[in-house]
Image 1 (cartoon, rainbow, N blue to C red):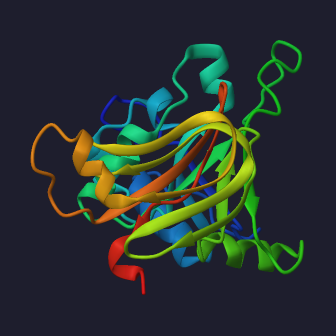
Image 2: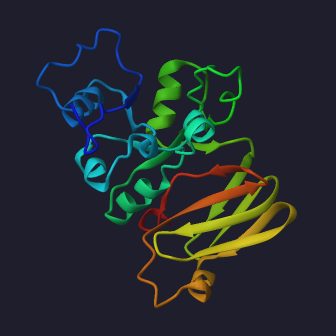
Length: 231
């Protein structure tokens, strides 16, 4: 069951059936994840930084729908809460993964590690099957508090409407991003071509990007958006 670091795998399977059979003695983490997905669960690579997951680990977990890009308890207790290093690398290898966050509060020190990260799901109802379907369809964004009210995307630009923020950025798979910075930003439009102004060298074609809304120390993140899926 060990990861590259010799740790047990931590895999979140949202919507796992109650009668799901336990792991077999010789079953690996990737095998267990594949079985969970086949059973209908939404499968996530949990807190990759805390678990020290490598790119090889990420590649092996082929059944995953998403990477946990921020884990609040890990961030508060160990400063190992960031999982974007793994998500972005896997997306650059054409893995169409989503980005989720987790509160994961253990309440070892009161509520200092609680209430710090949420998945904001767009669902027709709070019925578990509806919520699970929305997760699988990518109808959600993740947040530490800021709210994203609306996003309009074309092949040329993106418009973001949100609660007041200091920075709204479009992050690409290359070493470049485009940002709008100011006080109380609530409605901005960003053209992707601006990313080339900040690149160290000629950028490869942009295959995917994600949007980040920053309000002081708090952030909200979209899932990666794939250019070839745009109209």
